[in-house]
Length: 388
Image (tube, rainbow, N blue to C red; front, side, top):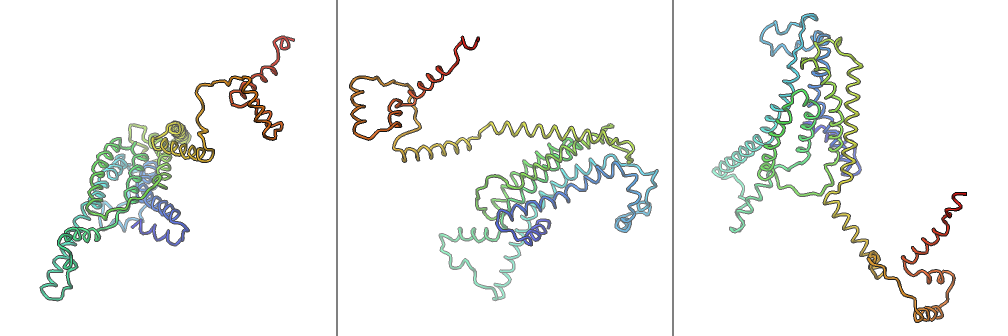
């Protein structure tokens, strides 16, 4: 439902390119999922725990909503301000629900339910066709004209054509939301990473089954990265450095947290804890980016080698020789009478100017280097002049 709402809102904006459309749609999906997934835990951690005894007694507006679910009238009575007691385990129970129970429910809705629904729909279609055939009102079977050798193949193709289309954004959204629980609230329940490892191990295999059996065969598409989801992951990592520090400070008293009144919270200490945690995260992120920039992946090395070969072939085709190869050993040309006579004969055959005379004295880069070194030695001040 959230994806449908985001898609409809995105259609109203009328983006010029498909890339801009997909980027904006990803951002909307992330914002909507951020609100629905993390807002309940944020309210518990930063409203119910610190300010529960002040806020909760004034929430009688929910009395009518809770009345159909109450078993006794005592459950509907608003607690007194002085008698209200914070449940310290509520936050942990919420985190366990979203990291364990919700993952199991999502697995059932994503894998088991579509399989049961498809099987039931297929069975219903078969029963409907048999019933229509008995009455003589059914249409002709589309496979009646199939070649016997191709009948099995065409049947499989028709069955796959009725399957749903695989959307990779759905799996990316699930992984980003899961990373959000890990980075934002894993400090509340330290077994959160273990739960996600087990879930991802099962999810990896269930997604493979889903793609192979329950979805149309996806068309491979090249992509440099996961696109705007990288920005979402970076935002969650940064926000996690803040929420982790805040939760560690709030629940530093044996994990019980505040007693529902903000009197036990020192604002300067909370802000200082968040400040140091955020800057440590920024420093570590900078170090990791610097280290990764120094490491070339095999793909980058291959791409750099291909670009070098393209430039080398271009120079070879243009200049007719390999200009990139430098001789390993310098063999200085010996000046003889025959070489001087040959140089004079070549210069008499064409018009020469000062430029030609200059380059005739320095034919190779080694000779130019020697001339430059001699000039540097001549221009260098002598030891006697330095002492004066």
